[in-house]
Length: 333
Ligand code: FA5
Image 1 (cartoon, rainbow, N blue to C red):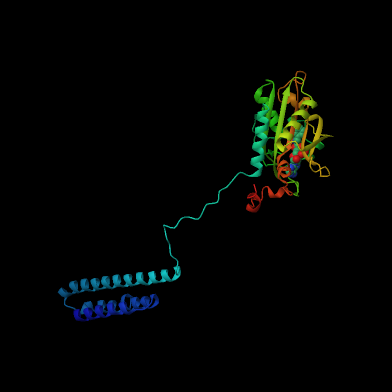
Image 2 (cartoon, rainbow, N blue to C red):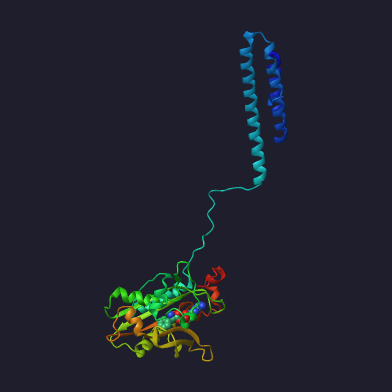
C-alpha cells in the first residue's frame, strides 16, 4: 500500500503539472482529492493493514494530500495570473508620467456680481447682513404688513414647509432682523444678499430659486429723493455711466409709496426695459415691527433681482443658464 501511495502521488503531481487550464485543473482536483477520489479510496483500505502500520500510513496519506493541495493551489495561482494579464491586455502603467493638467474652477457670475454690489454699497457706508433661507411666516409676511388672507400673499407663490415655515420668497425679511438687532439705533444702512425661492413656472426670466439683494436705509428725514440718488449712483457704478433708469409707481405692502425700478442700457435706446427691483419708503407698520418709531425716522428699502442684473451685465438671454452648472456657459466668465 505504501508503494501504491508513492506511485499515486508521483503520478498525481505529474498530472497537475500537465494540466492546461483552470477547468481541467478542477477536474483533476476532483479525481484526486474528492470523496470518491483515489486518495480516499486508498485511505479506506487502511483497515486491512496490521494495527501498528495504520498510524504511520494515515500520516503518510495526509502528507501526500497536503502536498497535492499545495501543488494545486500553486497551479491555480498561475492560471489566475494568466487570466488577469489577458484581461488587462496591453495596458502599461508608468508612475513617472506627469499628471494631466487640472481644470481650475472660478467664481460663478452671480458671485462675481454679488461681490461687486457688496463693494459698492460698503463704499457708501452700508453693512452686509445675513438672514435664514428657511424663514418664519411672521418675518416673511406678517411683520412685513402682509397678513394671512391678504391678496398680496398671492403675489409671491410660496414653498411652504410642513413645519409651517416657508422658504423665504424675498430678502425683505432681513429688513426686520436688521432693525431689531440694532434696537432702534440710527442710522441703519444695510444690504442683505441671498437666495430666495418661489413656486413659479420657469421661463427665460423666472426661476424658482434666484438671488436678491435687499437694501435698507433708515434715518431722520430719509426721502424718495435719497433713494433715487443712492440707487442711481449704485447702478451707474455697477454698469458704468451708460444706463437709464425709470421709477414706476407700484404696490408692495411693506412700502408706501412703492415703485418698480426698470433699467436699460443707454447704448441701446430702443432696447427693452428690464424690471430690476422693487423699492419704496418703508411702511410705518414695518418700522414699528422692527422697533423704529415712524414719528422719529423714515427710510427706504429696495430688493434687487441679482440674476437679472447679471443677465444685463453679461448679455445673457435666459436665466435658466444660471443654475444649469453647464461648463460651456460657466467657462465664459
Ligand atoms: C420683492 O420681492 C420685494 N421684496 C422687493 C422690494 C424690497 C420692494 C423692498 C420694496 C422694498 P418682487 O417680487 O418684484 O419684489 O421681486 C424683486 C425682484 O426680484 C424683481 O424685480 C426681479 O428682478 C426679481 N425676481 C422676481 N421674481 C423672480 C424670478 N422668479 N426669477 C428671477 N428673478 C425674479
